[in-house]
Image (tube, rainbow, N blue to C red; front, side, top):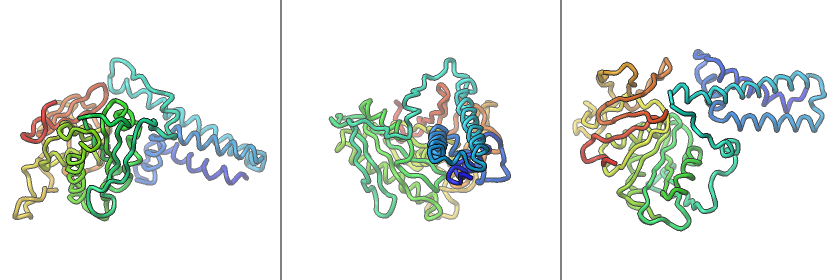
Amino acid sequence: MPIGLVVPVVLVGWATACALTSWRRLGGLARVPALVLNELPFLVGYLLIASALLALTQGDLESTGGPIVGAVLVVELLGLVVIVRRALRADGALHNPTAARRPWRRILLAPLPAFRRDIVRVPNLAYGEGPRRNLDVYHHRDRPAVAPVVLHFHGGGFRSSNKRREARPLIGHLVTQGMVCASANYRLRPHVEYDEQLTDVLAAIEWVRSHAPEYGGDPDQIFLVGSLAGAYMSIGAVNAGTDGIAGIVGRYGYYGDLMPAAATDPGDPRGERPSCQPVERPRIRRANACRLEPPGRVRRASRRPPRLRSLRVDPLECHQRRGRAVHHALERERTVERT
């Protein structure tokens, strides 16, 4: 029995089954493997092929059970093909007029380094005291003058991930287009609560505002970009009162009913701490709009989220442009400048 091949085949088989089905009662035991496989199907496929080639060169596939394990591996590769084909149908699901042009070379080489030699990374710059309160700055080698600045916050459900695991191809592309980018860590749960995480985000924004000119950035053109929890806290930072933000882009995620900045915790006599109590659900005037939830109380959606076309939830205005949900804080006075 080729034990060295059985282990990856069993793990990938479970993840493939979870990704192709819906076993909600298993919770994270099914959700996490499905998430990883949906995010990295090509990388998982490479690992399976490499394991099969290693077993073949060592003669393990000729041992007892080897052909059966090999057949299961082929079925799993076919399952990965199904997952990729499902992803390619996203344009139709989003009613895009034309299919997106996909950079297949970059997609297939995704596990390899994503940055060019003309991009400089300045790592682990501290924006505050303590662990994980740091960020990386990326700029073009020739140092642009007064370039727009993009500050990225990673996702991870407020509990995991880091500044080096997400959006690297995006950051590399933006830097080659003349922008200055930063990607920030923040403290994670359960060691801290949401208010402390939001404090980290606000501190990172202020650090970027103060130090952007050192790397060729324009402190008056700061764009916040986030994934999942990062997008949630980017919007929360604007709600908390940070000013001078040129725009917010939520790459993906369900951001919840973000508390209006004027609402505060009734238990805070000074009125300084944002409330985490549920707020009255805004009236939805369109059947295809989406709803948001307060910080710290994001509930898992029980159904597939409706297609977002247009929604106004003060102080945020949400639009979909060619399948991408872009969240603009355009209506908050003294907070976001119209671009």
